[in-house]
Image 1: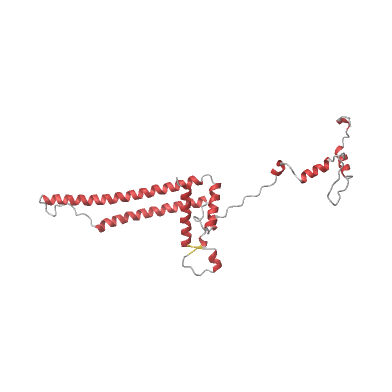
Image 2: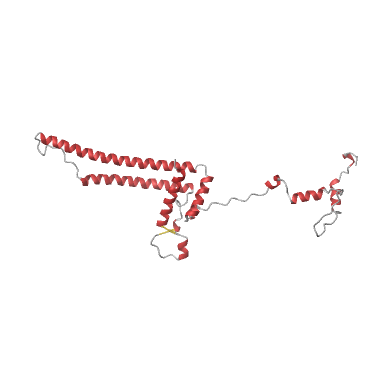
Length: 239
């Protein structure tokens, strides 16, 4: 036992393998009475280590559980499922919050701009009407004939027609804005903004069976889910 490493035979691995076959059998009771001076068997020790890893490094090599895929937003027709989906989408997309905030900001700017222009049109209508009335009063006071007087103010019907035409332009702009926002929300993966059309039925459709009806939503329910999602996003990402 006092020799140096050069005294060991060159085929040490073969000898250890042979010795391991003469190890005493394990009792059925599972209790081992090992002598404290028994020879250490490195081969058995190695096998036990591989079969029962104890350290952190071995545990870290175990395969990780795959992340559950996000449900296809186009198939979602329930609020609870949609809420879980948009939460995962927002967590996985670092640009999601900024995109929603930009949409909210642009919508508010457009609405303020439309309102301001409508109020400006109403002020112009009122100012023109007052100006013509004052001018006609002055012309009449100096003896001008009716033909020499300024143009008569427009009637209430004419003013309302002009205002209705302006409102129609705003409505068309709102439709375009809504379509653009819907497209962007669909691209972000937000539920209820790219729903499969086959899952949406008319509010008055009575031809579906109860099982088919359970997998679909009506147009009214679909619009309500959209409004609820918009309200949720505004609450979450408003500045």
